[in-house]
Length: 322
View 1 (tube, rainbow, N blue to C red):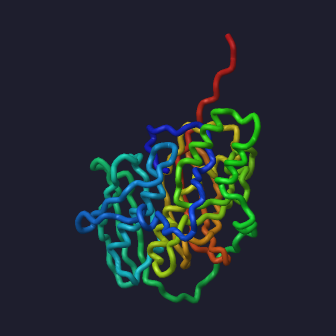
View 2 (tube, rainbow, N blue to C red):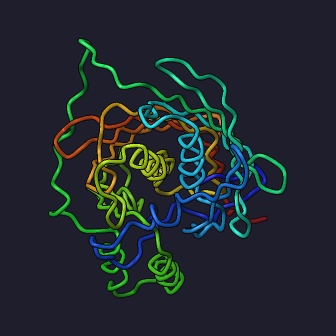
View 3 (cartoon, helix red, strand yellow):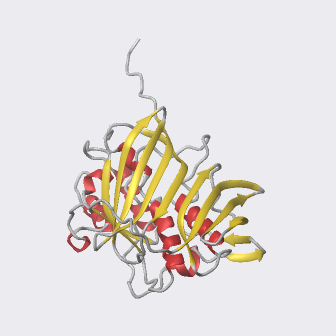
């Protein structure tokens, strides 16, 4: 999620929010609402705010996804996004719409580049550049191998995991209230962690997470542009928190996404399960770096992601006595 340096986040790294299970037959709200932009003028669009994290800041993935939708509206149907790069520059206010201003940077035969500013109160909250490419065959083809993990059907959803925790005796009332708020806060994606303890920060692990993820509801085939925008939305979910899995005892004062990049490699459906493999190769200087790979269930690498974020910890209390 995006925040300014002056904004604060509640202590800790809580489990990601999870709503009650929705029918897979329903049309995805990411299609019907979140990524539906209103055209105000040529190259100018307005987006609605849907799921709001408990931090009460706009979800960074929503702004990225909507900005990519705005950019995609200005290119031909034969061109598809192959990369995006963006900077979060201000915290997003969930109480007002976001305006997206598209600048046509370049139109070429094989590539088109667009620059998008997401604006609130006359100031940019995100600046995104996206490149669109004409799909072309290539003799150069290779990829890493997808990790071997249990299938999503064998894993518990975040909703089930939270309810399990809530059923434990001697659970502190403050913790119970926090988890109940999480359950009541609807998010339009489904998540099934491979190792749930990494999400709860209950134990020290290497800075790496893997979880199955997909959009809630049905999107369907035939619109790769839309699936790419949904994947951009999904990519920022539980991403930066991977930096903290090696520090379960540390209390977080603030976490803020600074920049975000994605590369799209192959076709995929964002309403079907994909494995999100996330790792943090470095942290220091109050910043952390995370890298991610979205794998199709058949082992094809769909997309790669990278993000750097600001991480400020709560100063330890001085327990010395005079």
